[in-house]
Length: 136
Length: 339
Image 1 (cartoon, chains in turn cyan, red):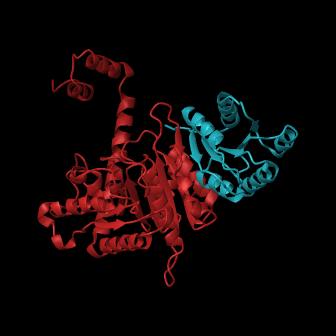
Image 2: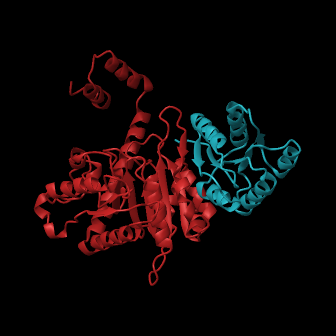
Image 3: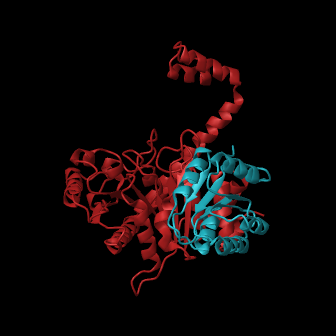
């Protein structure tokens, strides 16, 4: 009898101190039956990658409102890869200017969500990306 | 090849992967666990339990930090932390938030923190917690801190698993009657009054002291439900080898009282070794695990042998009040001979 639960790390890298959005998303994912590891504010990319490794998550959800996403997100992707976790799906939420979206996607970010996103869409995207190809 | 050799060699990603495979009950995980088992039995397992909001996670954070940065002259010890939080009974989802309080431990390769959802288990731990402990033990972590779900009165599984159990209290949570009830306070080897900078700390401490004084020395071997084949009886009790729980004040957010707590934990460790209780605890713990597994496997095997319709039929009779639950069991197992 095996029970597959999607594990998601919800993290706020960088210096902005507003985590209501991250909490709303964490709660929605919980209600969708996922196990959400919530790490709180002001995480360095190293802390995010370390938590992703120890928790063996399927998904990392990053909330960035500070405008520092073009510095923080690539660094986190790089660290995940260096740790052997290139299979982890990375999602970004927050204030991301349109012109940055294709650049982030090009680096491997699976989904990007701005204000007004419906949590149902995030849940569906996570399920598709994790369960769509998973074996173990 | 299994993940076991990589884990013994210190590969952290392999360790994290195996923990998931065991949590998900995958065969591959159990095979690795079998291989790792001979390497277990060295770590000191320290349980931390108490009501929600008493500061368990903050205390675990401070304790782990202390073990990593002990006063001069003492050697740092490696620490694994398993933090269990509840799963939703409706969706099975969970928010695992204990890491929020454990930021001080980031970037230290001598620490490994793993959050765990209880996944429907009710005793304060998850079903796979004991197995995860074994993996950390085999991987060479010297201290394993196990933080339970925020526990009320009866979540005492931790005392069966850990060598040393801390029960964390905070001022203002209950009167003296709460303190003499059976259950969670009884299992404490060390009682911690956290948030000791808050008003009411004296009265909380006094209630706990009184509780300990009311009690006459009792055997502290856990009873295994429905199993008399274990533990010491009253005749073999020697009061001089009984452990008297220690009461300590801490302020986890400031780190106050943490060195004293670490030293109380280490005196309990010495006590267990000097009195031979370490071996008793190991034996009781493994017996508990063996019995639990036997029950699961026996039920699963038996269920596979009887037709679903027969089981449904018995359930229907129960619902219609034509049979009591005890009669239904007798009916299913022996064809109703005890009716």
